[in-house]
Image (cartoon, rainbow, N blue to C red; front, side, top):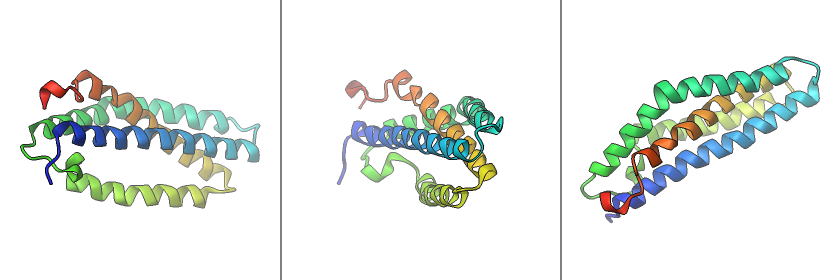
Length: 147
């Protein structure tokens, strides 16, 4: 069943924003867990800051381009389907990376260094997703006139 390009775009944006928001909460929870174990360590503060810095770099060099490319691809679809919000490779990647991230968080429980590492990783992806999401607005991805 064909749907509108706009609906496919909205689904892509929903996934993009949902991932960023979920990782923000998850990263914050991991940071609190690390703080509970060792509040005196500089890594409790440095890991989230490094995550944000790396996330800004990822956004600039990877995520902006990826998001823009996906928006242009969706706009060009002749008979879009909901599942076309991302390319099949990206859907497979998400199906692998989401459970892997959940496993990493569970494995980090109670381990200060691992909590800091996963916190930084999650926040870097969070910042990259949320920062690059500006592309949806910059390219007027939701404009009904374009679809």
